[in-house]
Image (cartoon, rainbow, N blue to C red; front, side):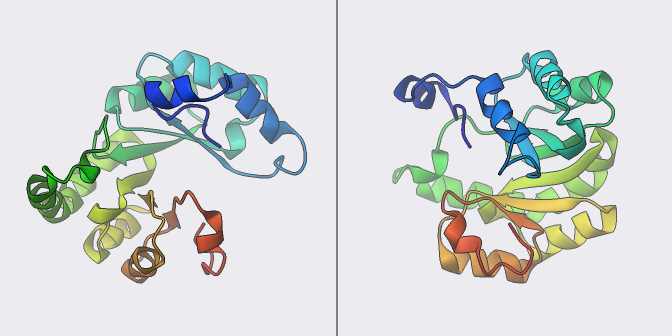
Length: 190
């Protein structure tokens, strides 16, 4: 469920508040579903934590974000909340620009090479229970690092069956897709 992915997305949708979205998870059939609140904007941590507490959703919620300062703030507000570190920090769909493809390919190759070491060093200090990565960064090496750290590796956003198969083979723990039907035979990966 998306409340708003970005400002453009928010303008194109009927107004749905965080409260509206979270209320949906307090009654059947969603009352047993685990929730990830992907915090896109820093400065909303208090609001998100309060909304989760008010609905008694903290035990089955994770808050993930690209903003590491927000992770520290959330941990201070509600130590029981699981945290997810989303990587890399992006604020526009840079992977869709034809002109940028060579630069994006080079940047992704560099991230695939360097991020496993960075994750090993940084994730424990962030208190992350999971690392959420752009799917083209997920590798068997990164999956091994997250397994060693005892945290989940979740790849976003994958709508291609071949990419899903590659990610499963790489050892990711979860996959985000706009089409959940692609994940039906996932062997535990949702």
